[in-house]
Length: 213
Image (cartoon, rainbow, N blue to C red; front, top):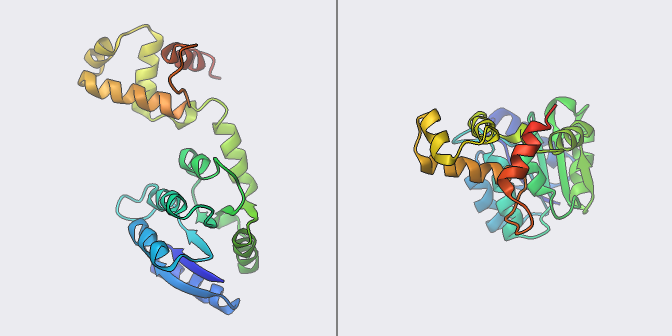
């Protein structure tokens, strides 16, 4: 099995390489950021990718975004996300079409190296390896999408619930109206509210906000 690893911690990356190779597989590239991951996958077209989520330069979700790009360029490419964090919005994108060939493991919940390697091999063979906590968070936070909104988006949505226009929201938050428009668009995207002639997205978003726990 040919493997590409992406992990920004050099010590952890080297340890993962040794584990994979001791199992009899070949690590064809071991990189430290998302851009290098995409390039390595294009060059090597491996049997499976293992990537962290938070990597340089921003240490937010670069690894997961790189995995999405790799899957876009190489449909069906098996990917195992191995991280301390659950990034819900992009994780749902990764699982959107099918969970086949996808794994999402939490570093502090993997009991031993054998469990990790078994999961990588299962995903490479087209199977699935999802930590139960990952599934629970995706289901819990995916019910209405509100938990995925940024603090600023929540402020904008709260103002929308008061009936304020974009111009009035901009005045209250002391930002440009264009910035408010971008936040509103982000709210619609996060809440999965595409344009529809049957319903007013602004009203639907406000109703979800008002029904929150």
